Length: 484
Length: 96
Image (cartoon, rainbow over all chains, first blue to last red; front, side, top):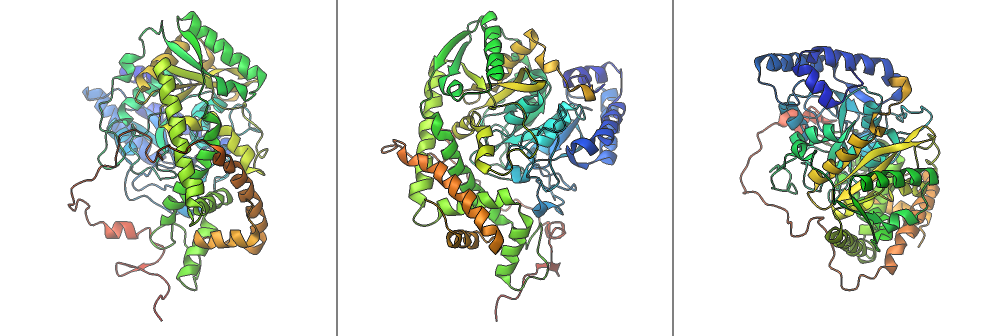
């Protein structure tokens, strides 16, 4: 059952090939068997999952089931889950039992999906290898000596190893797309404001966006359909109708104008990877798409812009962790200052502290204009570049990450090397546009992804374009042999 | 611009983070490298560019009506408190 896509599993439930309880038990067994080596889950909610699966089976029998009823899934541990440990990969929240559900969690529940557990992640979503987690690194199912990418590494490893058919994830600078690329999955970061951030623990509020890691564009469309949409509890949620993503999948793509981002190909990506990207583009040409080279001249400013804006917002967001109301608190504080500084010093890991300090620095008196304001202006230039490009072309394509999965430990000594993993992905976050990554081949038996970026609210188009490729090719069906 | 140990200690204090003496050199080195990287922004031609704080053009933060909508869930919330008593959050003495 675990090698089926979500769409196939939905079909199986409907035709009574198996029940939701059987399906849920099957995936729980796989988690039990494989989580030790992968470390993909922080929490497994087996008991509740079986209760929810039994309810789903009754709904299926009564003919009251929706398209997602009874399908197992996992949530990244950044989403608050009522009554369930919600750690955000941090010691700071290692004792935090959320008193409420995130909107995303609530919607998945309403859709009848069955939560198997909560997935490991880089601490507070800060990292590109899932090695900054308080709960230890996640391993890549394709090769246990490699990282799965980050920050949604647990979700990626869990789906890639078929421990769950789909998982939620979040993307602030590439945290859905880069792990999708490194583990051979389809990962979408929707338009900023498309998916509610309510109950999604904030890292950088003007960049964070929730999405999914899945096996196919079709599975992504089915799930995003239920996740997306206006939420009055998120003040940046956009009040716009959600199109029918599933219906849009089959539209012909002849005449599609694909922009090749010149700046993406100048960076010198792995030659074997570039060959696969070129082959994917040739497939699109065969389907009737036109390739047009476009330039986003300010894209090289993305990395410095991001590393001012994101830390600034993180230092502000993470100021709520004070050792008083919830979360980690130090032993025997001497006074209030000692309580704050020691709780935060002991509760946060090194990368999170680095970013909080970077943020405090760029926002401090005397530096605000030189760094923060300058970055906000550069952000406008980058966003304008994207807007101009989408007047010429329908979608942009290029690599997702500079390399396939790298060795565990290889980049932990130098934060700047680690930051370069997101060089192709952060532009979309700064501009707020949707983007996805789909598998487009293997380099030395490790998957790599093709990134597709669209204009604001063009998720239906992106999924349509991704689905057209997945109908023509088999790369999304490749799976790590040890988990087949 | 590179940061010395004193700078890092001051930033850590601003951010309410305890950083030990022996951790300071590594943070100074890493933060200096990150700052050197973001220095590239100084060369950006942004003289007449409007700063962008929201990624969607024309979107502003919505305000809701000023009405209480939250239920009282103090007990539930305080179950997560490190130190609470009689419905109050406890902190070290702040008034001498």
